Picture 1 (tube, rainbow, N blue to C red):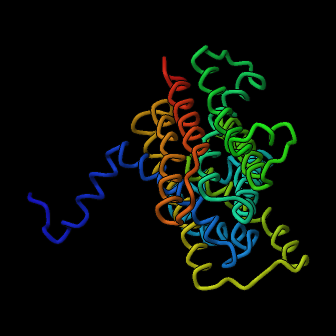
Picture 2: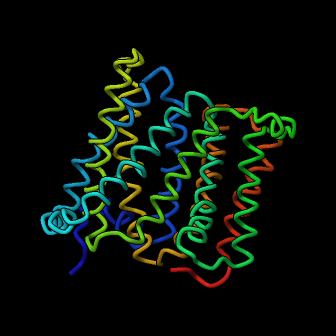
Length: 309
């Protein structure tokens, strides 16, 4: 039977759903756009309001997407509630709270490039926390990536390294990346539930743990009513980075495996740098070029060789 012509608009979506390249490239694009959203939120919506509101909005669509197995998954996660709570608190709330505060103190270009340090932190953590062997190329790639982060933090000025005169926003992003690397390593010990079910549980934990941060922001007098643009940014971060990109990434990993899917993280700093310069008009200095080459090249080198589980 021929396809109903009324459904012609769905053909590209079905094709994309079966294409890991399309899914993972879109995932990287959404993650990179999150850096721009962090920068654009300045003056439009306060950081903790964005963090808490993001999960309040995203939890509904995530739970709906996980509805098929959610009841069974909840029963399993009850026995691992502390694990789910810690993962949602550190990996989701901690990362995003630091990331959005950093957006008030550094540029979207820096936010994008420093995110490339996450795979290096994961590699280092796997070596020292889990005792995994590190190949020479992996070590070289991690070293190059960290050199790129240093180039950003020092703004290409060696004297800033001696005086530790780093931008506080850059340091916040680096700490956020460290937390997310710990979250990534923690996923190896995840409960035996569906990916969407686990995402729903961690999103709930992120919402609960972000409420005290919002209360602190209000008590400190830093809360401002979101503008129209701020509400749009909130909607984007909830439906884009918190929901759609997670679903796309899970599907991409399902199609080609985690090892090959991980290579697409190379695109996050590249996409982010391009959008920061083109859309926000941020200056692209020589040290940004050096940092971008080191970060993207380091990730690419670390991914070479046999695929890792």
